[in-house]
Length: 435
Ligand code: ACO
Image: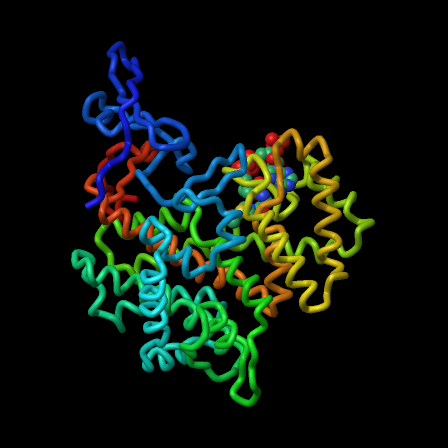
């Protein structure tokens, strides 16, 4: 069990219905202090109201910290910029799961454990064949990942530490295989088995883009770019899909079912689907001279058009992931000889115009990670329908780390919010003959 690290820092007094209640205050290591309202309902018979959880900390967590005003994102204390520049996705997986960077021996052991689990049960290929060929990859991923619990019963006991660990390794290892299979199935091409001499991301690229009739060589620049994109998406504290995973897990559901719930939530356009919208918008703008027209539309209070890939609920500064994504975008386009990509030109020009415009400055609207990710993923060869599946692949480690942390938290309870009921008051049933 994990020990609580929150520190008492005083209290606040709430006066309600002429009575006073002391609310203890706590601090963590970074970020705002919190008021503890756990006993409020019992003591004062009143709920708090916070739809969307904009002012509510739902848990204590050691994993990821975001300072939205300063544009800072830390995984276990390390800045996303340093990790994107110097680390690799598998090392970041270890860091998120275990809290520290691995030693050489620990890294080798972890790498082996993940690589050992990259294959999926052969019967899963039959399971895929039950889907229509034109099914959206995210629809397939929701189904297939949920079905893993039917294939791997021996790692579904959440009270067994070793089973939890095996399930974690299986999920991280099999997500690339499953995402590549979803792509292959939609293309009508044969599934490609993993090749354990390759690294995590190289293996995924090969399973996705190789065909048995041709030799396939992984391009190291493109593999490095995709690996960095995975790092940028690996975790983002208590976002909607992560909170979904925690809520599903709070009932004791098995890890495969919990991650399938996270995938379902991620699929929504307000969460994992924005990169596709940003790419579509840039393509629709078409030429740099049309940018002012779109900026004008975005600023018009009577027009609900928004610049996709701009603004963020938490970041009121440049999204640090967007900076790293922009670097990768340029590298990928240079590598494939598309440095004159018209969509990139429009993105760069649009970003410059928007960042100098009072409307965007006053509202603290900056590019978010999705602004450049669509261009980059398309240049890497992925169809737009795969964008969110790639996000799910990368976010799986964050979901697992958060799920594992929740299970080890002694304060963990089943998630059960309350409500303000505004429906009918109690009334008597009228039989059908009298209505
Ligand atoms: N373009 C133009 N105006 C915008 C934009 C935008 N992209 N985003 C916010 N605004 C304006 C709003 O119209 C509002 O203006 P007002 O005060 O005059 O009414 C103000 O900025 C505040 O906007 P809210 O919607 O209150 O901000 P919120 O924090 O709730 O929304 C969100 C954040 C949903 C991301 C929003 O900025 C948006 O819709 N962006 C475009 C979609 C997008 O890129 N989503 C990806 C997010 S990153 C991710 O999920 C991985």
